[in-house]
Image 1: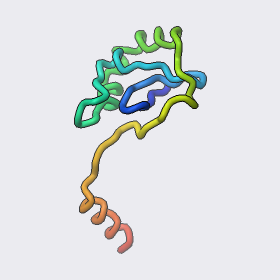
Image 2 (image 1 turned 180 degrees about the vertical axis):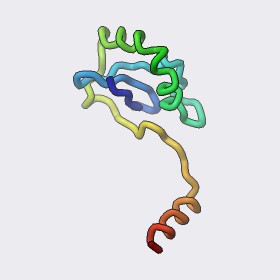
Image 3 (image 1 turned 90 degrees about the horizontal axis):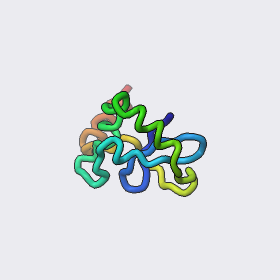
Image 4 (image 1 turned 90 degrees about the vertical axis):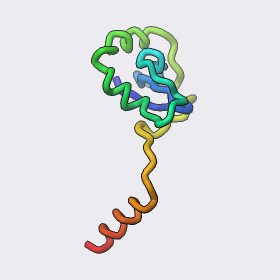
Length: 91
């Protein structure tokens, strides 16, 4: 059972080439800011395991029909990126 973030912040379970929507099972709001839905899903994973398994019995979306997104989206300041880049180059 793998967790994915897809279609504008929804959380899903990837199983056998299909994605099953688990957004409601995790109580995640895909439009919330900051975008911590996947962090919340990971924190609630053990408590929702049975609900997730029952999702797999329903219809899923084929993997090629969803837009996969980065699992944990977080903005990093450009100055922080420059700092890391400069330290890496100086070594």
